[in-house]
Amino acid sequence: RTAVGVRADGRLLLVTVDGRQPEHSVGMSIAELAALIGELGAVEALNMDGGGSTTMVVGGRVVNGPSDLTGERPVGDALLLVRR
Image (cartoon, rainbow, N blue to C red; front, side, top):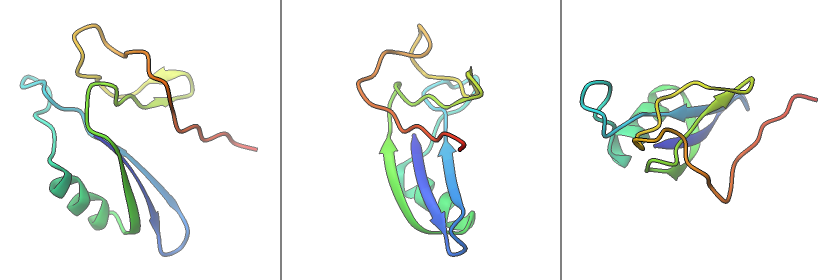
């Protein structure tokens, strides 16, 4: 799953949780992810995805473990954050 949140001070939260990989992570329900992002300080949040297409890339490197057996999969949309 992937979620985006905003804290009261305006800071952005990006959370990706791997799942469906018993040896690595069993994942989270939407309620569990909502609780986590709330604990991180989000006052507003949006659930982005809950499947194998959840992939977080930082600096050109995949930093999570996509659950598809073949790794990251092609997707038609993405949220990009670019430093100015």
